[in-house]
Image (tube, rainbow, N blue to C red; front, side, top):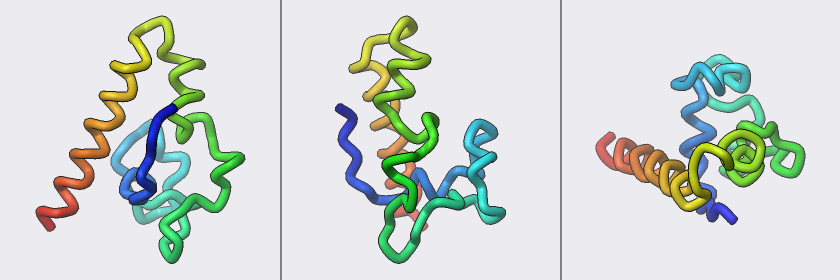
Length: 87
């Protein structure tokens, strides 16, 4: 299972990706993100795009190992956090 630390940075960056642009509330932040709690307001019914484990099963299991897929996701998390620190 993918371990998310719930920092919210991926939810605050949906506007930077064409794939996630459907979730953009107009300012680059996901329309389902609650900035007060740093959590998704529809977490248990979130889109497939937002569920790392389910996206792997649906689209990537025949393309790479789960470990590779998780590592790519963790890499993006790390990049978001690094950019946040640099601000």
